[in-house]
Length: 477
Ligand code: SF4
Ligand code: SF4
Image (cartoon, rainbow, N blue to C red):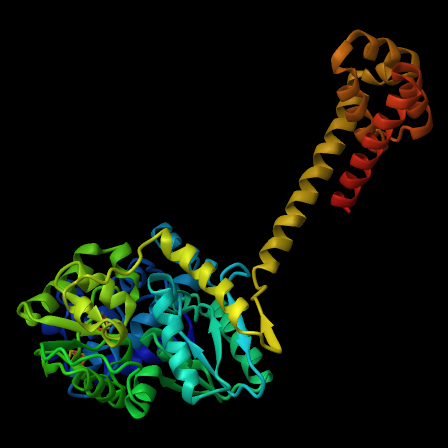
């Protein structure tokens, strides 16, 4: 068992007073027992308890209500990491999320644009460019009006891997991004997604991290849209529960847009998960769903405003929920539910389109697309090469042991090719293709081509066969 898990378990077992507070708030703990009881079940031999951790939303509410300042979330995350290190996680149900992440960090979807003297970048995350590409650009343009050297990074922060316990992959992938930014002079990152904020804050080391909401609250919202004067409640995403300045900035911005902000029972530090946290919905939808239902009850039919695309998508299915950034640009239409964010598969198309647009409108001295997936491409290439070599060895072996080499003698070959008529050129080219692997010299085969097909077509077929054979040899090499 990993030393981190041993230490966290020991600490929790010693300090937890088994009060009812966290269990009262959380359906996962209500189902499996308080954190101390769960810790008591972890053992070297038992994998089943470890897998329970994938039903915890990693929302941190238990820590926020704990009277002795424990953080059970850290323990459950460590249990996930232990499960991954034992090879029992992630589960097949997580594949969809990991594929989403994989696309985010791929060459096709990622894009870094760093203008002259760039020391800060806007990091909109994956969700905003996918659901709201136009909004992503509007916010960027507004930020650039007072931060002229601001760059933009379209990439995934790899929080899915972080939350699923794939710590080695997460550290390597996020670390590569962080090192690239620092190496190119970037010192601060402005995030639009609370999950990205949390990742940069926790692992960005020397990078200064702020949300765009704090910057917009200081500098003024992007538009001077007419105030809408409607009462709203704010849903603070659980990823950012401890960041009180961000909660204040968001309320400030909503009020500047003319909204009367009312509070729900759980808000700020004690906010609720929307149900998306920890990818629980993929393995225990009934537990994940309880968060959303609780949130809907607290909203009491009031309009809900949030600043996380995931929360906005999920809660939007249960109760009218708006993204704060939409309210800046189209307040009336947003509150009337007429602004519809894109859903999959259009989200992928939108991300590619946005990247294209940025390349067109933003000439920059430093840019890149991530090529981390090069490693898997190389791995696939190696497997393909080995496969081709094995097929060729098998073919040679088969020809030798079946005595089929007699058909490869020139006279027999000529008779054979004569017999197949119209298919003769195709067979001839195919034979030319595999001849090097059978250690047959090219010259006699070329001569046969000349005799069979005449000087012109003989040369044409020989060139095609020889070129294809060379390409095959190149691929194998
Ligand atoms: S992190 Fe959230 S879901 Fe997990 S145990 Fe704590 S309150 Fe429950
Ligand atoms: S709130 Fe804290 S002390 Fe109470 S059961 Fe939960 S972890 Fe233990």
